[in-house]
Amino acid sequence: MKESRDKFDTMTNIEWSFARGVSPMAHTVYGPVPSRRFGRSLGIDVVPHKVCTYDCVYCQLGPTTTLTVDRQRFLDRESILVEVESTLARAGEVDVITFAGSGEPTLCADLGWLARRLSDMTSIPLLLITNGSLLHRDDVANDAAAFHMVAPSLDAGDQATFARINRPHPQIDLEEVVAGIAGFRQRQTASMRLEVFLARGLNDSPQAVESILEAAALIQPDLVELNTAVRPTPGRRTPGVSASFLHGLATRFSCPAQPIAPFPQEVRGGDPFTDLEQLAGLVLSTLKRRPCTLSDLADSLEVSRHAVLKALAGLTREGRVRLEDRGSHHFYVASP
Ligand code: SF4
Image 1: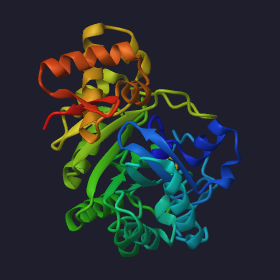
Image 2: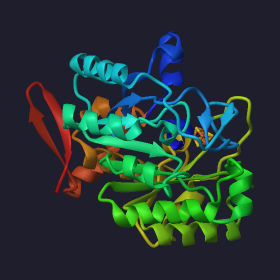
Image 3: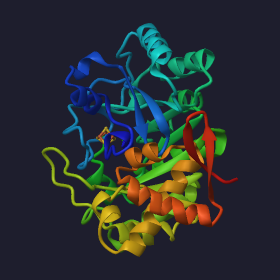
């Protein structure tokens, strides 16, 4: 799923574990980790490493080891609930509980059961990050409907590009995938962000882009998020597209769309006017989700405090952001 692809915001089980020098197999529940898109995210990894319906060329977790469309009971579901409960008790503030991680979470046969039990246990919103390949199936759609937010991905609108970039299981048909995501969108109340990953030479041709635009127009998500490779993929070379390509593409969707790739070197350097504008957009979209301190913003956006302050100065002047004192901390808040 997309969360595994370019995780500048929500780390995978594996990344989180390696960052702390512990065994990745030990953690079904991980975090909370700061997410630029979703706030402080507690992750739940419900499938073993690289059990997936796709074998995306850009996957940060390496090659898919089990390419399958069969759902299974991978883990002891009661133990997952206990682990979430104990993690929540000591985790502090958590903005979202995210099902993501090391493979495609809809392959977990306990997905819906877990989501419904978690909804009984906590009011924290549940987010499902999925490649969307199985949403045309009733059992999967019913499970996904138990989530407050669903973030499927779609990197192609034509079969040849789909095969090239996502390398799906032979039983997966792109038309069915698109119809499944669109049908879910029409029937369910969960909010939907559609993530599109762009790779140079793979799905950035005018024809490939046109077919992605058409598919997104059919789906009509709340938001399209455009991503690309901004750091090396272990063992694989996936060239990213430029920030200007993503910005230009964002204007062509018939629904709201925005780049989400962090482009740290471009935010920090290059033309100051363009960069500051880009950073201000990122700051504002972060604050629309939750109030943040200056440190929160600098850490989650991976830029200096000085750069964040410059962006905040403009946003405050324009009345789009205000400063609030809460206890001993100063929080920046997006104006309604
Ligand atoms: S869909 Fe599967 S192969 Fe593709 S990025 Fe996600 S985990 Fe990796």
